[in-house]
Length: 251
Image (cartoon, rainbow, N blue to C red; front, top):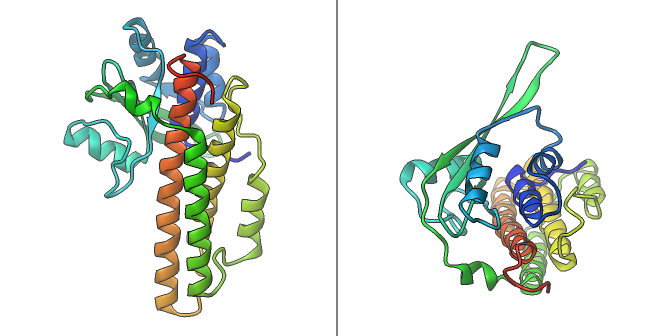
């Protein structure tokens, strides 16, 4: 089954839990069914909840692109960029950055995620409340169409082989294992953004251009599309969490 970033899944499920949907333990289990052990996550989530937070939010930063990441120190920023994802809360401020590793003997490997807490500034609520899934979807679709035109102009095959294209196609309508309480429009945008993000990753795994210059131009276009899809994925998730937390009506 295709996977959204761990922080996206945790943000959606834990916000759903805090709204009374499931218990925190159930939320973490459903968000991370593929993870054998977590450390530092549940404790920090309980603390945030006890201090009055109603929603867990997500940032998906990348090198040179800190959009959506709360203001924080250089150590936290570097960790979040390296991980490519982080959880945060808006009211009190605070950041959780995941680090994935394996454990166990050969043939019996398990996967664990260690979550490191960092200080971060609070986020003005209006920044989250202003996120509209309909606008996010329109922006992503325009970006996708522009990227397709650019890739067509470059030439070659954007996804290099039939396997990569088939994988991307299979994931388009996939079940992303998100809470049923997720607003439908936000769910649609999350699915689209997640699919585009995976498709760009697949496209970057093999060359589909005819020349070296074309290959570099193709990779640049795919990376730009991937970053836009990641921003949209984070924003759509946060819009959904704001609705589940009762900050804004469903839209």
